[in-house]
Amino acid sequence: MFGKRGKTGKPEPVAAVPAATMTAAATNVMWRNMSPDVLHAFDEPDFPPQPHSLPIPNEVLREASSVSQMPAFFAIGEAWSQMVAHYLPRDPRVVDIGCGCGKLARWFYIIPGLTYVGIDLYAPSIRWCQKAFAPYADRFQFVHFDGHSEVYNPTGVVKASDYVMPLKDAEVDMTVCASLFTHLFEPDARHYLAEIRRITKPGGQAIISIHDQPKSGKFTGDEARIDIKGDYFRRMCADAGMPVVEQIGVIYGQTAYLLRRPA
Ligand SMILES: C[S@@+](CC[C@H](N)C(=O)[O-])C[C@H]1O[C@@H](n2cnc3c(N)ncnc32)[C@H](O)[C@@H]1O
Image (cartoon, rainbow, N blue to C red):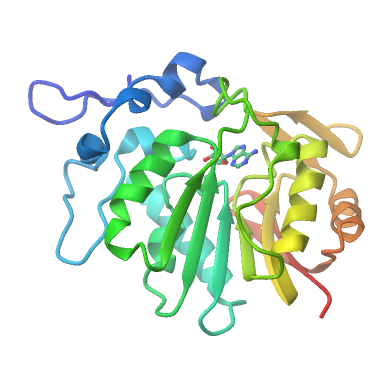
């Protein structure tokens, strides 16, 4: 199930388990007790690292960030990072909340002068990124916090609504939340918006994607899939002092919004 090596030395097939159905056991085994020295067992075996290139996470970690298939993993990561790059200033400071196994970070890595902090509560992805990006640790940092999520970290002890991002006030040019608010309950979403406002420079921006088709009401669903009505999301952003300045468009089924902290 968790990509253990088969007779051929390759990970055995991993069932396409929707992240939402992963159990505590599935999300927590192995990595917790594993030495960082063996984390490269979770590299994609068919495409080993090349000179000055990043390893590719194997299908287990890709699945945990919702797309196990390689073409989709790269296509979505590329589309997101190109979209974000369109709005970046020079030498930007970027924060990626719910960064997973670096689907976007590996593209941001190509932009010289960009510095990056990825944050996630799913320890396996963060530990893998810390190791994979270790040669570039001067620009790329990955932070795990033991936040509680029934889907991604059921044993976590920190309430997302209490989490203080490990960033100073007004140090960030761009915060990215790619398919994060699609998993956050309203108090957590509001708290994250307030934190994003705090860490963003005046005039700085954030790009957040949501599902915006609630069956009824304005904020519905569970951690597997949250839907927020577009108007209500705009109100939440305005309440937090990060008003929406552009509805960018639909990216792989989610609506992306550009928020800006007033200068
Ligand atoms: C659908 S995945 C998207 C991952 C990544 N943004 C990408 O596009 O590949 C959602 C990610 O959000 C993380 N996550 C869920 N709840 C979170 C929270 N409250 N704070 C930070 N990360 C969270 C999960 O662990 C998971 O890595």
